[in-house]
Every structure is written in structure tokens, then in C-alpha cells.
Length: 393
Image 1 (spheres, rainbow, N blue to C red):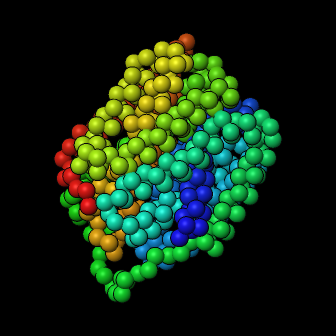
Image 2 (image 1 turned 135 degrees about the vertical axis):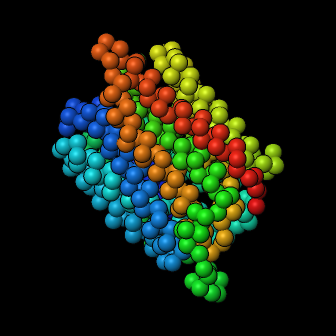
Image 3 (image 1 turned 30 degrees about the horizontal axis):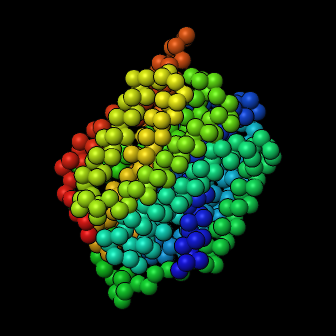
């Protein structure tokens, strides 16, 4: 189990890296293949949309085929092949296709890990373990900041992407060798239930809206718009962007570890999640109000948004508490579909928001619109979440 967890964790680090490295590549992709920020925004959105579209088939595969085959084959064929295509990109649409393939490949890794945790550990500690997995896996997010900028400067961006492809194929092979599927109870396949059974559960209805918007601002800012924002407003180069996104990435890791035990500390999941998301929304509203308040202020607000917006694993634990054991795979992937689907839709459409809000002579106008575009839905999702039913086990 330890070796299998280590390999799945490595796969999740790759998933975090794949969704986070584009801001650092923004300057070189603009100069080498004439990719605009709007095109890269849509490419990043395609990663999340492809990831989200795979959640329902991944859920079926986890329940029927098990996490080992599901994670290993998709990671190798999807993410590995996508990195190969990215390394050879000569036009912006090549980047879009590559990011879509990488999203498909990364789609099962975290859910395979959550599936094993849900089947192997008491429900009361799911949030803590789920947060620890994201916290450790977010080292991949860190690698997509300053270390990625260093690799680009040292080896070149194409060579770096070839290295990523080789690493992805290797991790997929080790997952196939090391992961062991949890034992299934007798009669598992005969138990009734489907995706429709989960959608018909009223206890999940107030959780879905916040799951849909919770991760979108943090992923959108860390994974894409921080780069153009820091470059256009403050004139930072790739190294400077790498430092700021590194700080934000570290804050997100701290947040994932911190959220995990808070439900048991305070005796509630609902109110911990609600308070954290309201604080995250407040930070993004502050960026909207003071987008040019200084690089120190911008870094602090981006980091705070990442810290307070890291409640994804606790929302997942809240939803999973209402899901029958024989539908664990489809349950975690349905919740993840809302989470990652929201990120994909917001990032894909954020390029259009940016374009439509641009004003000649005012570079801040488009970024103000973006911050508002990300902040308002978190506020509305948090208000909808007030109608959810608290549950710890």
C-alpha cells in the first residue's frame, strides 16, 4: 500500500504541475509561437474541461475496474502523449490539444487515491487524509512556478516538456506495478445504484454549487492569469512571476493541510468551509478594488486567496459522507466533476471576459473584470452552501 500510495501521489504531483505551469511559459510561448494570453486561457480551460468530462467514465471505471488500471493507463496514454505534443508545438492550437490530452490523462489520479482512502480508512479522518494528499501533491504546483522558470532558462521550454513526457510515462508504469486495488465485498457488483441515484439525493444539492465555484478562482489565478497580470501591471519577467506564484503555491499547500483537521477541531465541516470561502472571496474582491496596489499587496492577496480557498478536500469529505459505499467511485468523481468542471468553464470563458473588458490606455480594466468574474460566484456559492446539512461521518 505504501508504494502504491507513493506512486499515486507522484501522479497527482504531475497533475498539479500540468495545470499550473502555463503562467511561467506565457512569455516564451508569446514570442515563439505567437500565443496570446486569451489563447492560453482557453488552452488552460481545455485542460480542466477535458479533466471534468472524464470524471463520469472514471467513476464507473473505479467502481468496476479498480484504481490501478484506471490511473495507470489514462495517465500514460493521455498525459504522457499530451506532453509529447506540447514539446513539438508550433501553433497555439497545438498547445490547446496538448493541454486537453494532459487533462484526460490526469483525470483519474486524485480520485483513485481518494477511492482507496475511502475504502481503507474510517470516514471521520477522510478530510484529514484527503487534505494531506492535496497538500503533498501540491508540491507539483510549486514545481510549476520558480523551478519551471529555472528549467526553461537552463534547458529551454521544449526540452523541459520532453523531460515532463518521460517522467509521466515512468510514473504511469510504476502505478501499474505498485498500486493494489482494495478488496471488494461479496456482492459488490450486484448492489443497485447509479449516477442518477446520487443526483437524486437532496443532501448533495446545496454542496454542488460551492463545489462548482470553490476551486475556480484559485486555479484560474494560480494556473493562468497570475502570469499576465503580474507581467502587464507590474512588469515582472518569468523569474518574478515564478517567485510570486511560488508564494501562492506554498499558501495553497498550507491551506490544504490546515483544513483537514479543522472539522474535528471545531466539530463542524459546514461552518469551517463556509468561513474559509467567504475569506477567499474577500481577498479576490480586494484584488478587484486595488489591482495596482503594489507587488507586495498583490502577492499577499493572491497567497491569502490560495490559503483560504483550499477547502476542496473538506467539501469533498462533506459530500462523501452522504454517499453509499458501493457508489464511492461514482460519488467522488461526481463531486470532482462539479469542482473541476467549474474550473474549466470559468477558465475557458475568462479569456472572453478579459477580451471584452479591455480598454485602450487602461490595462487594469480587464483585470478588474477578471477578479470580479472570479469573486462573485464564490460569494453566491457560499450563500447556497448555507442550506447544506452538516455531517462529520
